[in-house]
Amino acid sequence: GYYGDFGGAYIPEMLYPNVEELRLKYVEIMQEPSFQKEFQNLLKEYVGRPTPLYFAKRLSEKYNTKIYLKREDLCHTGAHKVNNTIGQILMAKRLGKNRIIAETGAGQHGVATATVCALMGLECIVYMGEIDIARQAPNVARMKMLGATVVPALSGSRTLKDATNEAIRDWINNPVDTHYIIGSVVGPHPYPDMVARFQSVISEEIRKQLKEKEGSENPDYVIACVGGGSNAAGAFYHFLDEENVKLIAVEAAGLGVNSGESAATSVLGNEGIIHGSKTLLMQTKDGQITEPYSISAGLDYPGVGPLHAHLCKSKRAEFIAITDDEAMEAGLELCKLEGIIPAIESSHALAVFKSKKFKENDIVILNLSGRGDKDLDTYIKYFKL
Ligand SMILES: Cc1ncc(COP(=O)(O)O)c(/C=N/[C@H](C(=O)O)[C@@H](O)C(C)C)c1O
Image 1 (cartoon, rainbow, N blue to C red):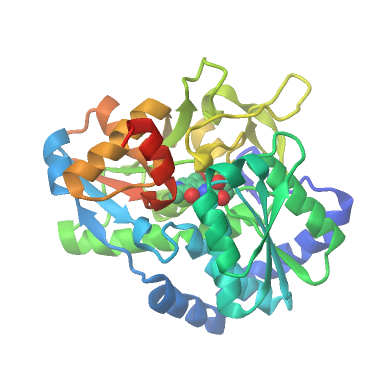
Image 2: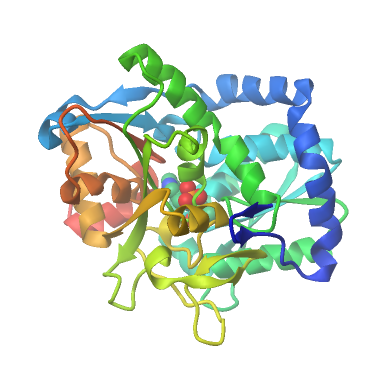
């Protein structure tokens, strides 16, 4: 359960039975033919996979390189999060669980969890920071309509890290009948690996689609935004051992990495434990989690998955920090050039083209993790629409 020096399961003793049960069973369950059959069928019939690998002609012309967008914004629920929740709800059923809990920040993961609970008729409780409930109101309404109970996290800074703490507290109190669907490649082993495996359908499809379109399975670059790191883990997964495929992980610089209002964990973080995992996190000198900031709730996370801590330390991936302003401008530019309104998280990845030069015949894949519907309020305020 380690990625280099990072990973592991540093959990309270009372959580050990739940996590140990999962660790012992998850690979075996995922490899069962009946599991794979149901998983692949739901991804196709319910999520709408495969998602297009769309050649963005006008964007490519603007930046004089070849840009393909992997359209995770077209998944059912509007983001990549559902790839993971489909896998985990099937896992929960095979583990005999009938109560589901989850944490969410941007609300996408909460919606994706509520969606699969409605699909399978399971009880769903989503913990969400009171601050995030206010700034992602449309997703809160969606979760309620889908039958979930949204519980405001009132502890700490009342954002994602507190929602995660409250979900962990719930799981400790309800070990037998409850499965905790973690929304990103974070948390104690086996979650980072399990979530990455479920999201790896993204790069599995990219390889097939690129082969058809360009005659080669390998692009020159894969770019993805990183909050906890699940959409990036999925987009990178099948390229990790292909050293000519360069990986670019994009974090939220917020108001700037030296502004004190940022979520650029690879720049501002150092080694520590967060939510049961040894990784890089933004912390005070006595190891308390520092409150991050980003205009996007989805990247507003003070840690990063252990896989990405390793990719950063081993320099297998280049980490770029993008500010609120750079992201918002890039999001609006995609609207005008390609008629696609991206999630603000995904807009951070798009902003790379402004600052990094690619060669004319480079093939660049950008993982468009979600669509911008949930962010219209923020776009309206920012651009005074
Ligand atoms: C459209 C979209 N794109 C990217 C992200 C960042 O999450 P990762 O892909 O796991 O790095 C997110 C993260 N959303 C989470 C959520 O909806 O709850 C996030 O807030 C937390 C789970 C980290 C997202 O919604």
